[in-house]
Length: 101
Image (cartoon, rainbow, N blue to C red; front, side):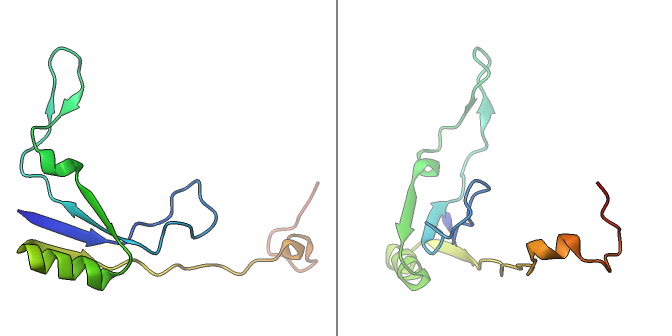
């Protein structure tokens, strides 16, 4: 039984940083998912795939995994690369691609 500890990124529908500073512990699937022949749903008999534990810090999540004797791996979040852009740059006279209407 192994687990993954990570900090979730913001969703595509978010513009702010809400719910992004927390750390999540999820168990790796022990069985592959199967397709139900009657309805076509994807099913799994693995009940641990439904467990999702949320912690405030990475250290709390790691301490919990060690206390429970879980094999775990920590995925560090990627750094955000933000471009500094200005609305007035759209109307500069020395643009590489001229703006026409």
